[in-house]
Image 1 (tube, rainbow, N blue to C red):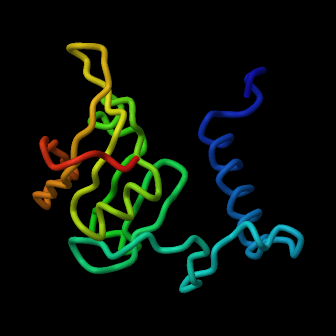
Image 2 (tube, rainbow, N blue to C red):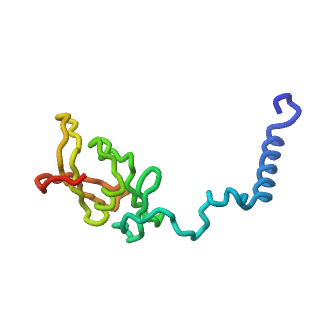
Amino acid sequence: MERGELSGDKFINDIASMTEDIVKSHNAPKPEFAGLFIKSGAKKTSNSLGACPRCGSPVREGGRGFFCDKQDCGFKIWKANKFFALKRKPPDAPLVTELLKNGRCAVDGLYSEKTGKTYSAVIVMDDTWDKFVNFKLEFGKGGGKK
């Protein structure tokens, strides 16, 4: 194609044909790599942290957050959640487990952007069934745990 010996359409068609042949001839992973793929209907390997407050399915930890097993449910708590980032307290499995169980979790060491100091408060999961799960703080409920 670079030397003008092949048209753009012919080049694209050849690439598409080659890709189709590769997919057809390699429809199963090599045995040594089979463990990297999750089979349809296979059980998830990570432990459930609790029941999804929206649909009751298990919530599990993933690389970037905590997600409901039922994909169309939409419940997720991102590890890079802005609320937790501003408080300098990223969500972890024990905190999410407590939030799923009780809807709230007492936490120490939350950062105040105004004062630059840390404080204790109760984080309350305020899920409005919107796209995102929201959180709010309650004060005067006793010391934190985390």
